[in-house]
Amino acid sequence: MSEDPKNVLNRFFSSMDNQQWDEFRQLLHPDHAFHLPLSPTVLGIDAHIALNQDFHGSFPGFLHVIEGQTCDCDTVTTWGHVKMKHTAEFQGIAATGKELDVAFIDVARVVDGQVREEWAQVDALKLMTEVGVLKPA
Image 1 (tube, rainbow, N blue to C red):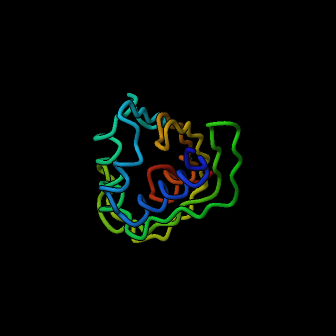
Image 2 (cartoon, rainbow, N blue to C red):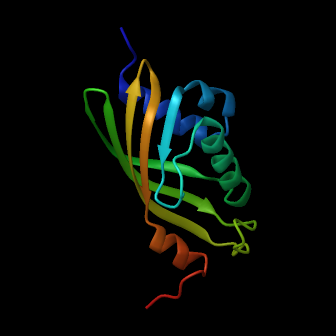
């Protein structure tokens, strides 16, 4: 019997938060596809890991706070917020030293105990405003 998809996602977020990249890689299906609106392309395994490593380098303390999850067959929807501190340059954006708390929604399809496909949405407007790319109205 396969592992409960919610458990797979909880391990997925935990391994990401704790920078356990070998475990994170094992939780990604060989045909993994990560859809992120801020990315111009769909990311595979290596690009997904590299993106998370870059985030951790610029935003230490990166932590998913899960507020809820639902599961429909093999698809898990998770929502909550991500806490982090902007301590280093990230993609041309100078460090602000600010503590950030940004909402997210993640939809992931689990196949054979691994994340096959994932769609993530973060509150990019709040994130860009907090790091000074956009000015508040």
